[in-house]
Image 1 (cartoon, rainbow, N blue to C red):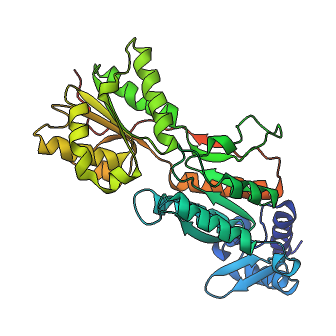
Image 2 (image 1 turned 180 degrees about the vertical axis):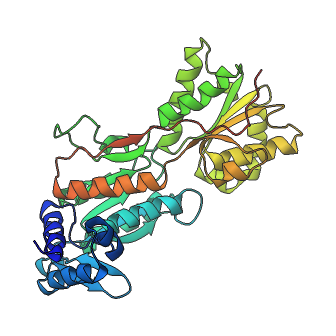
Image 3 (image 1 turned 90 degrees about the vertical axis):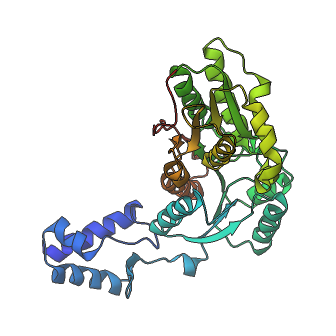
Length: 365
């Protein structure tokens, strides 16, 4: 068999098996040269034949892609991605993971963000319904611990046979469990296992000898409730009872106007030797309050957090934190949604489990 024919046969097999999907990029010329131990000229000859046959499409300066016939057949190739925020904290890397994976699988992204506003979420969902152009939706829920006012629109989109996948959190009243391909109703989610992650964070404090452990959590996001459950489980496992006087509940509006919540946090942490924070943004706020009061981390109070963002690395001292998978989570959300598009019975729920990254913000006592 001629060398160029081996390349042709391999690419055709990848396309027919679904390993290379419509619109996806094929390996580079260099990669194919190495894989088949052939010259660049031979690779280009094989690609040229497949382009002539309409199987591949060459885009100057970009690469070579599997021809996307969905444009002619009317099959949709655009995915709506709706996040709470877009340009800071963990969100850029998560969105990058989504976009790169969807591009690899032959889909384009239409990005929206809600600023954690259910009103804005409703506007976006209404626009998606009106235009009826997307193949699927990745949605990060807005204030997911509260009753959701947009379930009617989500139900309408589901009835339109447009798959939806929740990311980072979920609306409990509309969620599919991860019990396998059992035909369970509801919307799947890809997220961290927030309860187990919080349990590990608080257990690290308990293992260091701490017993008077406070926590500062968000009350309007589902992650806050799940993380509180992990806090409770770790405390109870040691035969202790969670003290309400040491627990601070915040909401999205509180974090926009931080001055009026500082005294509340001070009071709740006054007799604590350690504190578990909802995420690194909250941890940075707590550290600022402690600094204002002359309390040092970890000498006077130990601190652990969630997400392991750049904030956890840049604070002084750097913070012990449970990593958020960020880009990997975005990639998994994109991959699972595409599988849902092609296989509606696919069990797409997936929860990441991570271990704490220790940097020295916890003192042994």
